[in-house]
Length: 276
Image 1 (spheres, rainbow, N blue to C red):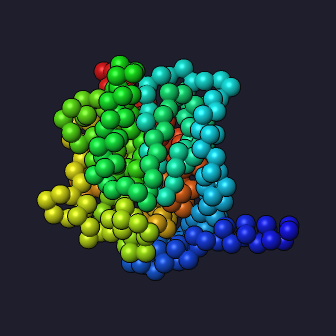
Image 2 (image 1 turned 90 degrees about the vertical axis):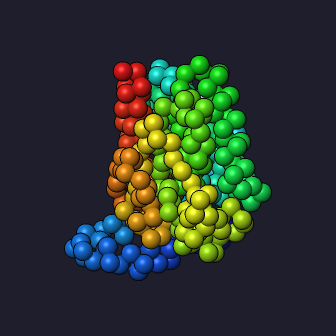
């Protein structure tokens, strides 16, 4: 039994590795401009972080009740923060991030989840707008939106509305495919396939638009194995602040202390700008 469990853990750990190799091949023009030793170190870090994060994500996913556990000592800053997970995940994606933000004094965090197999992007936008209105009325102040991967596109689209934008003070995205990902070719479900770069979400008159009057930050890993090619991680408008994290896997960014520190720093900046 122990051997079977160990084998399962090893398989889960190395699941992201083929995707990292594919990402390396498809981004070779960008990679070869840097020294081989530097690229090798980044790749090893990405493989380790991706494997560990995959194990965490799979083992915690069924236990959504863990999201309700309150920290022993709550942070005193009450700025409302609404967090939206990515494709195929749920609110457990934010378990460690919430704890790290609380340690940085931000305790008023709310997670919002959806079913990746039974909904569409336009439906998510409408539902999230209702949640933003509810939180805004409940807290009587502007909200900061944080989204991982597809969640970043959802918070962007939801806040691109004159009335909703007034309720939001800033957006922070983590590993978001602003121009889609070629891996959507093998995605399961309509929502996943809609993330292909040729999708109407990224092309034509109905493509995703972003709010213009609030702060927008995109946090990007240089070794993301899920958003390919890597330039698709970069917003196609100039009014975003782009911050590059250490070499991490796509999901690993959710569990990184350094990424959490970046998120906390951006929350502080957004809040101070909003207060001035």
